[in-house]
Amino acid sequence: MKNIPSIAFWIASLFVSSAAIAAEPLVIDLWPGKPPGELPVRGAEKTFIHTSPLYGTNSLITNVTKPTLTVYLPPRDRNTGTAMVICPGGGYWDLYWVLEGEQVAAWLNSQGMAGIILKYRVPRPPDVPESETPVGPQLDAQRAVSTVRSRAEEWGINPRRIGIIGFSAGGHLALATATGFARRTYEPIDSIDQVSCRPDFAVLCYGGYLKARDRDEIWPGLHIPPDTPPVMLVHASDDTMSRSDQSVIAYLALSRAGIPVEMHIYATGEHDFGVRQDDRLPSSWPQLCVSWLRSRGLLESRK
Image (cartoon, rainbow, N blue to C red; front, top):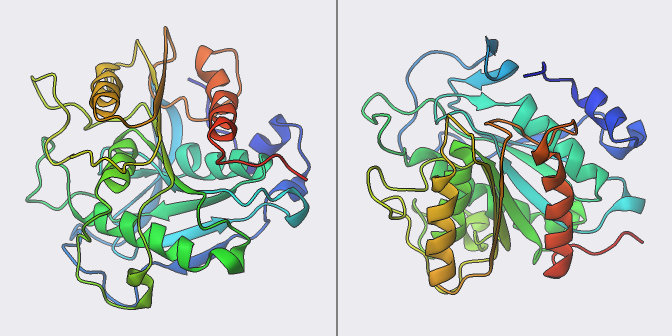
């Protein structure tokens, strides 16, 4: 797999000007003080480079105890009013910050959408094994959606067109947020928590922790209420990290619950294809996503 290019390279590859994304994003703390719930206790936050034969070279962040939002807004003359909270993957151990964060924000900005990267707490606490999903990131994601909606007017966002997009383990986080909005996973602490944390749509890319282990059922803890927002699922059949049946089972559960859902499973593409534009089959999914959003009235054409 090719090395991950910088965000500037990605913008150039889309043939859009450097003005298509803010040079200096706004970074805000998600919580006023110590976040509620359990925090990782594995050392100071750090960014590191990881290289593997399967996934290439990636820039990762770990040991996050101070969650933040990194806000990339599109230029005003390209703004459609739609926004997505971005949940990078990493198995709830790390965050694939460039591949599934900055590159996604660049793509969203190129389409006139705000891209808001959630740096949620990782790694999983020592008492949460690989076979379970931690609760802390779900607190962060609920707070993130409420924060974006509370500042929608300031950031030029339509408060009824705020979605969430997640990759790999971030796909589970996106679905947990899109289905678990009726109950806060923490006690409200300020006026932001009085604002709805329900996303208006969700996009899950090669999601993990969607299917129960050894059973063709949705992941334990995921319950699908009738007012779950529309969901789009994307996967590759040859994914060796998160099998495509993760998305299949999620699709069936959502469809049977009467939730508007669309799914695209590619014959090849493996894992961590992100929003890259190359000769691989999944390169088409970003445009399919744009078409899906427009078909549901969630993305206006640019003025």
